[in-house]
Image 1 (tube, rainbow, N blue to C red):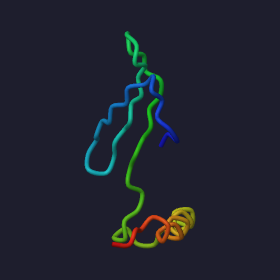
Image 2: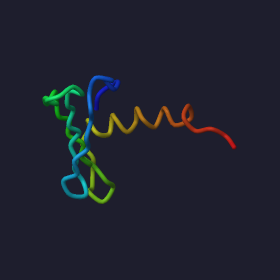
Image 3: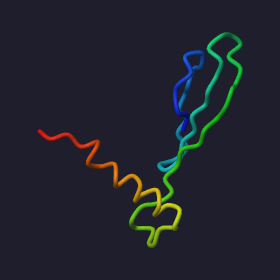
Length: 73
């Protein structure tokens, strides 16, 4: 996904089934030319079995950030 949103773009999410979608970025000025398209999809759920090493590394990195993002009530 993009790191920051460009204020000169219009972003429209297009869903293709339950596990996949696309983010289409258009120029805000007419004729609204296409700038880029990002794909978002689910690549792993526990029911899929053993995760790939690359996915496992991403999960471990995310897990280390949990204490920073959880706020105490």
